Amino acid sequence: MIPYGRQSINEADIQAVVDVLRSDFITQGPAIERFEKTVANYCGAQYAVTVSSATAALHIACLAAGLGPGDRLWTSPVTFVASANCGLYCGATVDFVDIDPHTYNMSVSALEQKLQMAKANGTLPKVVIPVHLAGQSCEMEAIQRLAKEYGFTVIEDASHAIGGSYRNQKTGSCQFSDMTVFSFHPVKIITTGEGGMILTNNPELAEKLRLLRSHGITRDPSQMENEPDGPWAYEQIALGFNYRMTDIQAALGASQMRRIDDFVQRRHERAERYNRKLADQPVILPFQHPDCHSAFHLYIIRLKTGEVRLNHKQVFTALRDAGIGVNLHYIPVHTQPYYRKLGFKTGDFPAAEAYYSEAISLPLFYDLSEAEQDNVISAVKAMLWSGKIFLGPSS
Image (tube, rainbow, N blue to C red):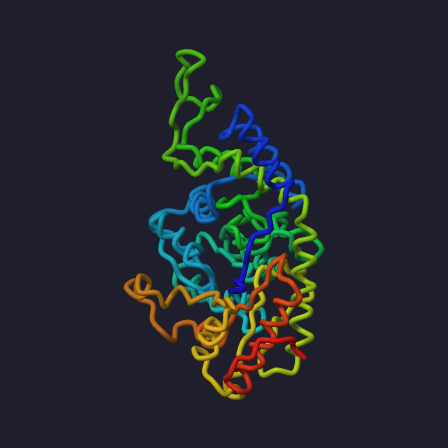
């Protein structure tokens, strides 16, 4: 099976983890701060806060933004469920903004239209989470303009996008947002095994995030309400969580950051090769916005269903059966049973639903060989035209 994504671990990564295991700290130690500084410096942000997952990052980012009961969070329907669930964790109401049919990211025009209606109805969002699907940034300058006009906090869900850029600024710089969230799951651009991070240029938000990731506890006397009883003193001043990352994970992440530009470059090379060899096929290839340099976490094609012999499910299933580990990113969140019980229904976001009926993610990762990619391409071509798989060199 050729997976759709896979981590790349080298000897330097292994040695970095071993060094931590042989040190005095395997959690809450110096590797955490080194990793945070490495990512912040790379992205051009002032502050970085590591956490145990991108889901944890989204949760406490929302809490730091003051999201709570009676508030509203908007995000894209084409995302992993965590981008929406984080609002529910805070007791807020969640809603969605339909996608742009070219980039598959949140549509700026749909967002603006929805904001105008919400202002008239008194239902404006407190937080908007644009999702950088497949590693390509949303149109953040336009979203920031709307944030200033309508008064909402912007949290970029850049789980797919570390190593990419928007308008010549690295994703994560927070030039056009309040906070940015990264994921370090094994299939992402770099990995810590599991893990996430929030970046921001706001010192108050950074302080809140650090507090929330560790039980809401502080040992800083300047933050305590009472005079410390002694050097052992700590106070819980907020309701936080155990969302900490270990030094073992942070050491792996910092080591992976040494190769991040190579990771992204290889992904672009493989994506361009797909583009060349699938250019004459009945599929829509990934559109790249001129303002963006994608991290290319995913390579997503859309079937031109009227020109393909088999239907979407048949193509997908046959490719899986042939050992091609295709995937689908994502089932629109509003169609999930839990969200249907909240009142959402099929037809609410037609662009997202049309995308879902045609999309397939092909294998794309750093160590994907040309021979493996040729097998993927041959299989896709065979399924599109004959409905039968033959694995061999692609033409």
